[in-house]
Image: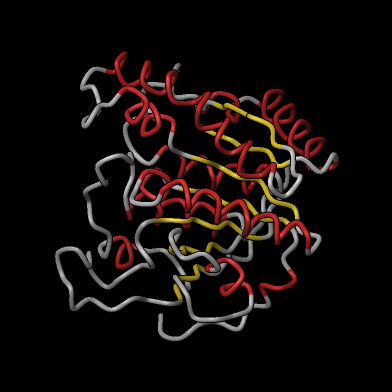
Length: 269
């Protein structure tokens, strides 16, 4: 797992980028959102296609209602997502409008990707949006979901979306800079791992189990997402979402974040 494999990331044209709640709701969250929109606009200017998977509906709902903790009941969490989702999309629409880019909201559930006709319909819709030059912004439909709302929902969703649209690369923007040998919050001496050839039991052991205050996943959820993407032959970049140029730097081959190389098998729809 030492070093970084010389993959030519510059050639990758279609990206799925997932942004975590902690990136958008942490200190300077609005500035982070604007910076991410700027990075995606730069990718678009290079001729790349981007599908954005955005968490943050519940965190935005908490801010809107002045709450410091999530409701404990499932209906409360789902109502919180319903409150936050319109504002989350409005903020993204504003952020992308600076670059004259239009956005589209796409809310999905696991069932939408589990049945063949719904899977194909979702793919055709996303392909049409990309053809029109629109940035699709996808979120788990928390208002009606139960199981996925509990753990790592949008991390897993982003891996499924990457397979759905035949992405060349999955990018996970997190409040943690990279995969570390151990949870750096508990082990400050832990070193980052820039390259992971395969997500296996040993790699999964490096993940901390606790999600952050506003998110639903954690490092383990991101590793499982990278594992799903690897199975489809899609590499994954885990990058610091708070670093303004992290995507461009990683695509240039600079040592930022962690790269999970894609496997050789690739699914087709």
